[in-house]
Image (cartoon, rainbow, N blue to C red; front, side, top):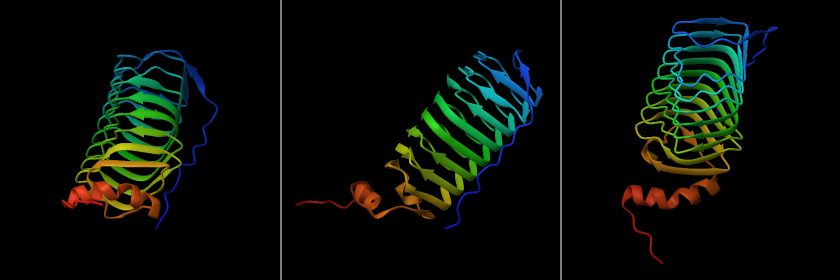
Amino acid sequence: MAGARRPEVRLPPLAGYGGGLEPDGDYDGLELAGLDLAGQSGEGARFLDCALRECGLDETRLAGARFLDSVLTGVRGVGTGLAGAQLRDVELVEARLGGTQLHGAVLERVVVRGGKIDYLNLRGAKLRDVVFEGCVLSEPDFGGAELERVEFVDCALTGADFSRARLRNVDLRGAQRLEITRGLDSLAGAVISTPQLFDLAPAFAAQWGVRVED
């Protein structure tokens, strides 16, 4: 199985930025630290060689935004809107997010490390060379998404929906907890471990209409 290619983010010296977001804004070589960006609109904005650290993103509107060669550390928020966004060569570290909207987004060479993300919406998204590492993903929705060279390492994946997803070289063996509630019939192209197979056996049996009785 081909492994995911991880991003190699090397940030240049950054200039501090204390302002707000603007639609179609251009942010280059900036550090946004400790900012409350709740409810602001950065739709269509471009972030190049940027660092967002400990920023509040409640209901922040970033649809169609592009994050390139950037690091997001300790960001937090509920209902962050990133529909159709592009993340390329990005590290997302120790995030605390809920209801993040990434449907239709494109993620390429992205690492999600640590933190907890609830109800992540990745419906119809394209993920290539993405690693989820040491994080908790509660009820993520991969419905209709395309996943290629995606790895789950030392993370908890619960209540996942893979309905109509297309998988290629997806490695689930490293997930410390694996719970798939929908889309078991879409797991072709993924690899799981033997213990995970036993854990998923009841769900597979239910999927196929098989009764298991002692």
